[in-house]
Image (tube, rainbow over all chains, first blue to last red; front, side, top):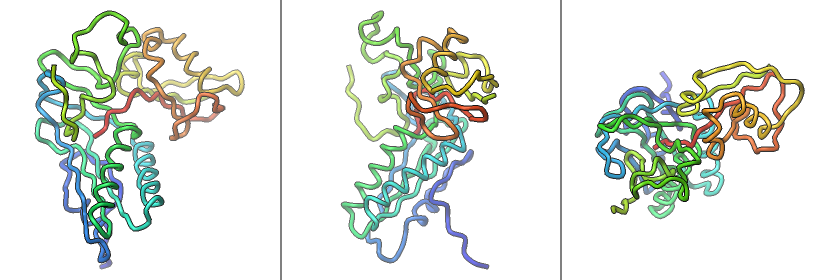
Length: 176
Length: 80
């Protein structure tokens, strides 16, 4: 039986296995593999989070992830990247996304992995509904009337400014 | 006729995940969003944060929308 290569891009509705994502970018000329694992966190901007419901516009999400992979590999032909994203109901500690990048050396691998997760967060049509003691709402879905200058909100309680609600985010958050 | 798909908060705002819309003629992404907001007032306050995708690709506001297209209402994405 011929070996089936793991997909470079995948969208799954159950536990994400990390190894196949690493295997998808591994090759003899790659001396470095960088990995980013996005995990559901127990709080967002001071609110407790118990559950995140992810949904995707599946055909476009897959197409957009393929476009991102192609763009990164076109920029640096020595780099290979792969991503698996999960959708459905995720609890604290569950893996939401795994990104891997390989390159001859670590610098390019880290840079490509960073670019991959940043582009995914900015472009791929995937949404999440955050559940906690204060109810449920779609992360980032904000009413223009709630913009700064509209009615007042306490800092840290705006509904969604694009960033600051991510599961498994890699950026430390400023706290009030 | 075009098929309109609504996701996440946009689906909640218009009350359905899919709807069919008759076009009088060729239109643009910008005009279509204005029409959707007029028909669904609960969507209107969010208009500035919405993008449209036509046939699976993000549309520029001047891009054409024509019969047979699948148009998706894309709220701010939150993957990762």
